[in-house]
Image 1 (cartoon, helix red, strand yellow):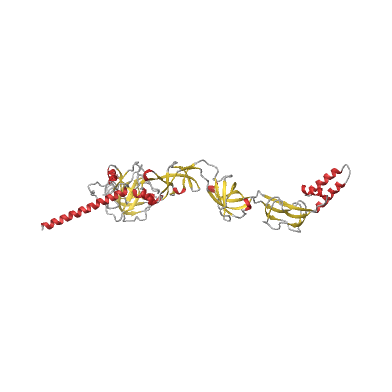
Image 2: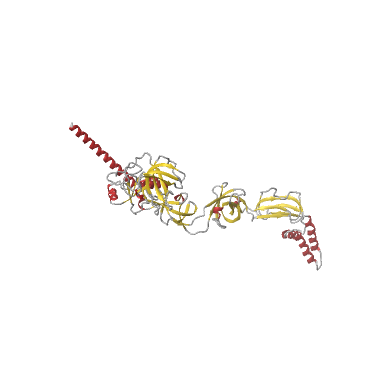
Length: 518
């Protein structure tokens, strides 16, 4: 009988030894997960010689404890976290193999000129400074039209219409008659007749034709003064025209305008004289260069945009009025500035962050002040220096790795637990008794950092409100801090349902950590 009892005791001892070995293995695994590089014997020995910065639960890395003990969230001991080689626990160290798996790419912070890079759209229109108006210099009749429709292309010097002008007949006959007269005073008469021909609208070329031919020319041929297209046609065959009547309006196409709509917020970045490149869908692959002619002093009250008038060279008259154009503005001014790829900058809503790559596989998020953006680059006004490396891909995967390591600085806007040095936080665990609009009542255990015993009291609800998964009767772990009015406010709270209630007894000879309810 005694032998049977002895065998039972031996078996129980063996099972206890196996369980203890499994427990120690689990602690080592958790320690390796929280402290990269400590998985080998050399790393463990190095970590043992260092003083831990704090203790935490790897499942809730944001909560820190100043002493070892049992986690209030999970049924496991707290894990120590050691300082990195540079003494900054805001870094996260990732091995090259993990970096390759995450697809981490980096780029250098460089100096360079920032292109305006502003893109806008607009419609092609005639250059209103390249316009010629053809009028009837004298009253007459339209005998023949060479250009019969609007938008007909014409070239400089091309005949447009033949006009029969009766007033010219009398003026030319007087001139020819004065030339045939003899006498000392005939020279003055010839000059007077020549002046009369000018007054009835004849050009110097037409006058010389009468002089050289000695014949009357009652018809006038109207020619195009510039090359372009007929924008307006005011003459028809057989109609009577009076002096000064508009016959043709010709628009040149050597240059065209593009009227681009610019938002108020970016209009100040565009100045007259800035270089512009234009592209149109009708001519893929073609780039038309020009410059900003003027920023029109008028704001559209509906769209809140200003109109930029862009003048473009139009070789071959390929750009036609009404075409839809995409414009890229490039500023000609500005000194060299720090710049990084735009994909490296993460906008969190209230700040701009880049993930800075350091030596030894370390990464650290850095707040930056950004400036202008263009051509895939963003200006950095504050926060970086030339030659540094920033992460341009997998930033959020690196941030997730930082979360697992329990770093104090993250990409999110949530402040670190020890961010507010002037108002320390105090940790407690308890049960929610009541939830009001501005207050939550919790029956909590002792809070040793405040030398409080177990009690039921109310705390102010944070301005952001409580998490949706907090309800009456839930067991919660919470952080509080004292406000200027002396009251205590909840700054962090999370449910601990499913976790065993922390015991008063220390575990494994360790004392209970400060801030953990006994």
